[in-house]
Image 1 (cartoon, rainbow, N blue to C red):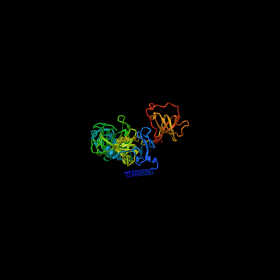
Image 2 (cartoon, rainbow, N blue to C red; image 1 turned 90 degrees about the vertical axis):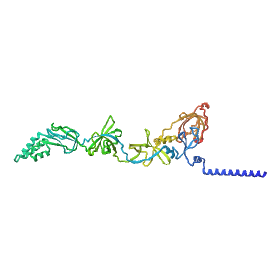
Image 3 (cartoon, rainbow, N blue to C red; image 1 turned 30 degrees about the horizontal axis):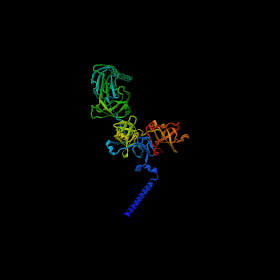
Image 4 (cartoon, helix red, strand yellow; image 1 turned 45 degrees about the horizontal axis):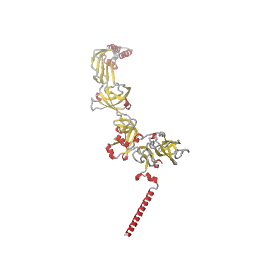
Length: 520
């Protein structure tokens, strides 16, 4: 029995020695894999990723270059790794969540932006296609062939027959001069012919008198163009004077449409732009034309400009007073970047588009928008052709990003300009320790930072501490934040000794010494 106890003790010693040897071997290998402590700290939690910085999730704007305890809250700093949400202003959403949010995407394309201006107007006569028929001499209307306004007429059609007494004397004089014999009758004939012209006869009527040798006191007035009689100033049996307007004929081969264009889109309508017109009275018919002019006058009642559109009118289908819908097509041929209008988030001061990236990442991009038409919006700055953007679920993505502490991403994605001067914060306390680059102070509450009483380290002033400041002195100091999230002493000076504040005066807080990791 005694020998068995001795053997058991020897076996236990051997096992213990083997375990200690394995432990030392593991430590040696770990030290070889991680030569120094700092490198072991940077590879946090064995993830194999090196943190970019540490921060307090409750104060994400402050960044620290080392791990430790947060100076703001009673918690450890959290590492932030490369590619994590909020690192580049993006948010990562899993495919399942994307499906639940109903995320749809589209591609930024290059193309021509349609003007998208659709307005209404009324058909009117083309005022450049108007002919006036007047009486060239005093006379009487013996017969009228067109008796009502708006009667259609053809070119060369007889309109009225006039009896002109003044022509009788001029024609008889001409015929008498021709019947005279002698060497000087040619001048008399020419003079008589000229008096017939002065009486209002045309060259065709003069030739008729010459060829027939008879007096023709009546004249038949014909339509010079085809169209409609817009105005009728003649009645059968009436006396007319020279220059009196008998007929006003408007052509219908082309018509005008006076379209009302809102002044906020008037810049998109230019002379020469192609247009298409449709009328409810002629379903299925499309009339093509162009903008003849944009009249330089805005209606005070409707805040619209008049665009004068000239349309071809085959068959005379469009008539004055008819209602028409006008669609303008821009004459600009340059290609621009286009995105669906639903992809643009208008905040009132900014225009934002959510950019879809690889790996389920979404990043907001500030864009400069241009014109809009047919559901497409022009992007002048901020995107490039071929990028993928989000069409639906943008606001939910924004909410998801805000819940993950990346609200600053949406507000400062593309902020520019120099950083503002860091504010100064004043405090009082007791110097606990002075190191080469750091001063540890037990200070009271700092209202501007919403800090309670605590002990923490501050970066020493660039010029060093004054000679009259040492450990145990009560001091008054000013600090400012640095880019790495720590605070630097700007000014420090000793103050008269004051009674030690009680726990109640210190807000009932007993702060432990500052963590060296967070302040070094």
